[in-house]
Image (cartoon, rainbow over all chains, first blue to last red; front, side, top):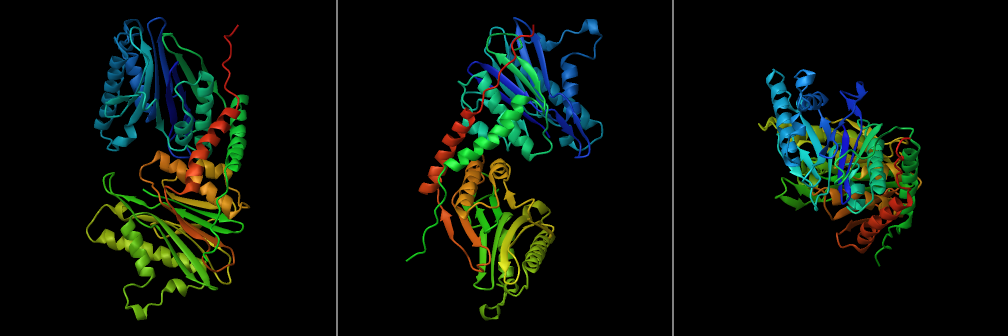
Length: 248
Length: 248
């Protein structure tokens, strides 16, 4: 499994992904699930995946035109005139890869499926955030649903639902993501550190801060330990239940 | 779906279940998913289910020997000499019901499946808590895993993992369960109020407090609203992330 979240803030986009892949609990690896493309002044694109890693890597390779000699490559990602066209291109490529694999004789379609979060901005348009399904269709984040999760989404959802605020700072957003990821890691072996973080500031048209957060990162440790304590205080601050006394 | 939790505390057992059943989002109903049997001074038994409600109701009917005339009924639940034997009886009945339904021509086995939480105490033995699988086998809660969840377990798990303490009071345990249930209800339409609550005090050999918590219950409202605020304070109390300044 996997856990990736894309947040649509007033001031831009924040992406976080874990890096654990597993085929059974005895076959785990660390792979990057976040891919970015940048043409400063023109566009920034970030893609995260859950599901079959071979499928996603094939999608990325096709998008980068790795089928062609190095000198002939002119990735259409950089030619698409809008984020909507970027999303269509990625979605079509995803659908094609899944379909190709399914046709080679393997019947377990779900094995080849992948779900993607795509976000970014192309000059002339606003920043946009999409959730792309293996069927090749997609939905866009808006005011009502300003974030997308893929993979092992349930453990980390309550804190996102309660604490997400589109006006929050990038710094607070990273804190929120780390709490959500930490809750997931503590409950599910298939999601693991390190986490990849990418920030995109609206209208900057270039990659913002990015970093890899390792398990021994002091800030992550502070959040992980601190959240346990903070939750405990929060829990203690609420009144206990009172049982009715015996009926007269 | 469903959400039920059974907690094994030092001072006894606490059970909570939701009451929503659904066959599609346009076919929802309220059904009790918690069943109790009591023979004061001899035993107390509580059973909760997730999965196919027809299966569980059939299990309960068979356990109560409703196939026999009223006067001939001598439920073996009351004859079993230990909680282990009660668990075997319930598990065998569950397996038999699922198998019978599957053999009548319907092929969608999972449709008939149910998973159960069973807890209680029989005179002469300690209180025990079991998780019973549709295959008819079961596991018992112990020190390392002092609670069981069934149904839509993921949303409400992080707070249980972080805040459960076997030494906690019944009053604090109910608060914990309500926070866990509230997180689930807020994230998943298939879990709904009212909630059924049952407490069993160790060695009492009789039913403890029980109540149904409705959506407009003032304590539930206080927890639901208060938890949002408390979480927000907890979140604010942690330090924000700091982006590294540009590399030199």
